[in-house]
Image (cartoon, rainbow, N blue to C red; front, side, top):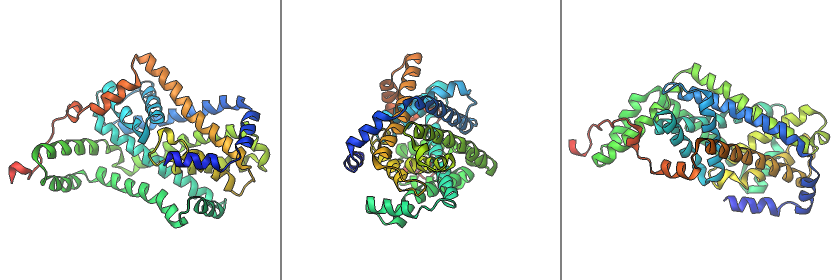
Amino acid sequence: MSGATLALFLFTVDLREMAEALAEANYIYLIPAIALYLVSILFRTIRWQTLLAHMRVTSIRRLYPVVVIGYMANNLLPMRLGELVRSYYVGEREGISKTAALATIIVERVLDALILLVFIVALAIFVPLGGLVEGFQERFGIAWPWLVAAVTVPFIGLFVVLVALARYPEPAGLFIRRILRFLPTKLADLIWTLVDLFIHGLASLKSIKSLVGLMLVSAPIWLFEAGLFFMIGFAFGLHETFDSLLALAVTVVLVTAISNIGSSVPAAPGGVGLFELVARETLVLLPLATVDRAVAGAYAAVVHAVLLLSMIILGQAFLWKENVSLRTLWRSGTRDEPPADTMAPESVPGSETQK
């Protein structure tokens, strides 16, 4: 899919004009853009610290490199497999359950999608998005109701399931155990161990107060990342295209939200191709200004390159400091078995030996 979208991105733009836009850009604005993105990662670390707190209280200083390395791995490995690297690495460094840590990372992803949807809905009150939806329908050949459902229903549904598992672990566990009764004992015990650890990782979702707090700390994550989009807009002269900086700010928040949700499908490393296509078309189709498609394409390519390379370079620096390699983390993470979580499996009632 990523290869197809990358080809579509390249074949639907004047590459000569895009190259000219890249050559004329003022790259001095990348410095504040990267600084804003690093602050965004700091807020990600604060949120993850909150999600992990019921298992172990860990300092921001220790978690920040793990978050960066996890994003670096996501940018280099397909199918978002960097999440496994991050859960393994924090488990090794902090002595917590890797499966439970992975559950907190899934919660992060759902919270990200929800806060981005909130941004889109809030700004849609002031910015008509009909032309944008119709443009995507024409570009991707998917009816707009299905398009909207595809980027909303999965995240909302998963959020409901995760909250239900966190708030009602005993009924959920009983239901899962009943299903596991039909499996061989060893396999059932193994699966239940993983499920039990996973549910344990969702403890932060139990209370409304905790959920509100997590949503509130999620907002600055994306506002600071939108700041990166905003500053790179200056690099390509978008501030001269829009009537006001407010119009540019609203546009870049929408581009940030839509491009990140649109490219959230696990595919090639870093979502290359899909991100550029969605970001470019969003910028072109939004009604607040008329942006040339070649300039929008150059802008989207640079934004994504900065997002990817900043984490790759900083992540590699952290790996060198820790004297470890990404390959080692990846191989260890994929080979690591549930017993390494150091939690004994609970016997599953009604399993094969008890029939």
